[in-house]
Amino acid sequence: MYDFDTIMDHRGTGSLKWDTVKEGVIPLWVADMDFPCLPELREALRKRADHPFYGYQAGGDSYYEAIRSWYGERHGLELDRTHILAGPGTVLSLGIAVREFSREGEGVLLLTPVYTPFFEVVRENRRRVVDVPLAADPAGRFILDIDNIEEALDRAGAEGIRTPLALFCSPHNPGGRVWTGEEIAAFLDLVRRRNMFAAVDEIHGDFVYPENAAGKPQRFVSAASLPEFQDRTLVISGANKSFNLGGLHISHFVIKDGAPRRIIQAALHREAHHQGDVFAELAVETVYRRGAAWLDEVLDYLRENIRRALERLNGIPGIRAFTPDGTYLIWADVRGLAERRGCQNTAELVRRLEDEAAVKITAGSIYGPPGEGRARINAAAPRKLLLEGLRRLEAWA
Ligand SMILES: Cc1ncc(COP(=O)(O)O)c(C=O)c1O
Image (cartoon, rainbow, N blue to C red; front, top):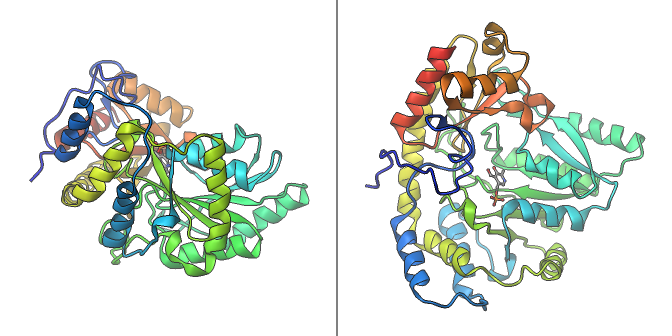
């Protein structure tokens, strides 16, 4: 049994989540988990740090083998060692995909709301965002409306925008949707029919609960497991979310087909990402080899956190919080609350919560226009801290 209940002081570590808010504020925003890492990881890093040489790394097969076994044992996905390429952080890797599979001025398809850096990697590489709002079912769960996406691509085409690439977030941040195999196949089929390419961000793939929000059994389906689309797909993933290694900036590509793989391999070499980091690769190898039981306990703990948080949030007038299929993020409609408290928009609501209630959540509007009126709450915190944050929200509401 690991201890996820102890509330630790993160201040003074340069933490984005903790060190950028005023003292006393409970941060339920940045997607870090406030749990101490796998003890074996700490031990492995300490041991390596004790060896006083941090020079260039040759990289070892054991790192790739650890990733390969993780996919096989955890997700039933058989990979060859050659399918895996070590990359920098996930967002940097998305940037590489954008540069390699689209040209300046071209469009990149995003289904929004979506993790903010998706917009940034498109715009900062001088491509255009082709933004398609995700549809929702009557229960408020995001769904893929393929016809709607086709129409948006047609509209972009009519304006002279060629759209050769889609960035797809699976599972979905901020919505917490775990797309089913059928949904992923339908999306990739569209990508193929349109002669496009898809870069699929699966960084949240290890956070899939046994049942989805509708109570149906589910599992994580990697886009790399659908054989008919591999010439049009690359997957970017990593241990960053699963084991809280965001500060180590490492990800990996899974690309089964040789043609796109050679493109990314060449790009990684050109961008000098062919040599590993002393600590990051060791960390990934350690967590994948030794962290399965730790992650299982984290998942159980998170499920209960999410259950309790939803109970709390849905008792607050003006909030409608949606059950996530996966991830540790809760997406909520907060329009009623914003209106009742006289806030012009969600950004103001979130700012006032931080200033007046000492709890910080994320405004949905940072994930694109369809996120306005919504908020994202990070449930990966010691339970007492999470519930105290939500109690403050409730008291302020
Ligand atoms: C969908 C998604 N992709 C990428 C990242 C960040 O990954 P990295 O730190 O490896 O760049 C996050 C972090 O929250 C995320 O939610």
